[in-house]
Length: 520
Image (cartoon, rainbow, N blue to C red):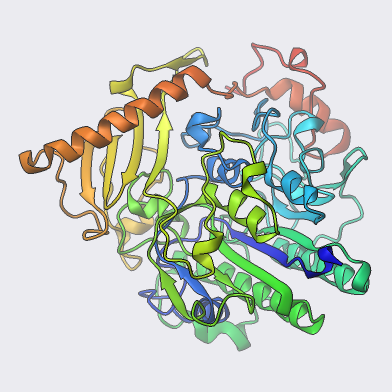
């Protein structure tokens, strides 16, 4: 049957995995990811892969195929999306799993959701996933799944089960094991179920969104990190904060190995595309690292938005395996690309998505799919009363790439943080960002480390003006669309969570959320 020949797709999203954290070129952790490095070397390495600079916008972009700044999710400073946030990725947008279901796929998400949960309509199984085991917020404890940092008024478990057509369930019956192990086990169950169904199986789209390698770096389970077996993989680093991170990373590497081994043992690997990507750049003080790129998480510099990504599959043409692509690729591109990978006609997709179909390029076409990327557009500022105000263009922050050049507006300067330095350990990602920064223009193809700012160089005035004007056009769209952001709703959410002990939806409509219910 036609559906039996459609490829399975397993998309693994790592959390806060930096440019310097994966592969043999890592300055200090090349042995921490020996399995994923082997996969990358046998697949297609996307060397100019760009994403958003923090978790929620990146996942919104992946799921919707839309630039966050133009779809209501562009206001993102550190801590803007909280467990108590009464907003999410707009329900007007059809998401990736819904499109994949229309092609006949079975769809499952395991891991981090992070794009809205205040009403049940925003949960994964209401947005196209058949099954879900997810935590909804940006971070939790690895072993007991409680929110991290601990909420002032209570300790809530952040883990829900979901099945399409049913109300969500709290995960009371789920064993409390290290989350990377839990998510891998759940992902392998989906793979086994697909294999067991044989010729009657629908093709599988599995979105495996690990918590790793986000903080807190708690000791991994023995099944994924054993000191006697894996300790040697820490030998290149001496800083304790980096070692703690590395243990989380090694556990992730071992988990990915288990997932791939399950694909092989069930004989599904031969008909599977496996994608690995990070959601955003790493935060050096948390242990992840982006060196030699500049900056990190929450920055528009390369360290915040250029991250590891690769595709591994026996379905790749032989000429593509073991190669690199230096073509521009953005996180929004996965929606049309995976849809095409699953046999879909991208002309059936919404006309106003921002992602472009890169499937032909992955399969060997030399045609360039995109020449520009809107990296960020934040046209808003929160005032002291918790009201979001729309800035004029000159006071908005944003960044974009056109061809070889990258323009950044109102970005506070960031260093290049080598992992074996005190400055990396002490940096505070996202604390100093704002509208008081400077403007930058770089040729990021020839100068990927952003060492030479060309913005005030008269010979590049036309290039700077062109990119700035293009960013201004995006600003107009962003200002017209507005932001979905709303102030946190603590008393409402906490009252609901106290009943079950879980982070759950806490409203049935926007009328349930008080305007004077902030956490401040």
